[in-house]
Image (cartoon, rainbow, N blue to C red; front, side, top):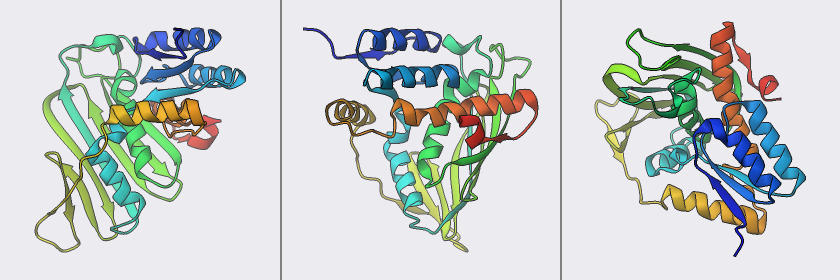
Length: 264
């Protein structure tokens, strides 16, 4: 029996070549994040696949974790009013540099690709402007950019900041979004709501959802069999890749990036 699809789960440096090889062989492709290590390469894969009427999707699973899905639903539906601003902090020490050790802007491509994709899933509008700054502490085992700060302004005015890194001696994890009628924050695998003027938090219930892997595989199958494009399609994932790359370019060139113009 001949395969209809190829799953690419190799180091990111190989994704571009291997996705193109699969498409040339007439196969649909599900590729592990990051799609590739450049917007140009990712666009080429999408273009080649469309020319051959093949489907390409990217396995970005974090946006489908139960807490993230619930948080995104509350924000998009404006259950607690319109969102205004938010902050995510992910600081830790990663003992092994893995495949991203020599990659420029290593944190962006290794982890921010998940963070930015998930942040995009929270809001009803697209990024408008992006600024970023990558840096590498003197003790970092990474060659470049083990830490990063990124600022994103969305078209509806929401502001979101991300401070993250693999070279922190301490550990800090924070995801908080401020809305008109309260603050939503993930703490210890729970969603906390702090209403205006309240002295304590409410814990919001989170129902068990389908496993992220099931959502991705079912969505990929439906994309192939019925043509229903999922939000993790290669074409849609170009926005995530553009955010990652734009933050790096902003850092290198010391400027704010117009996202729509950069995405092309």
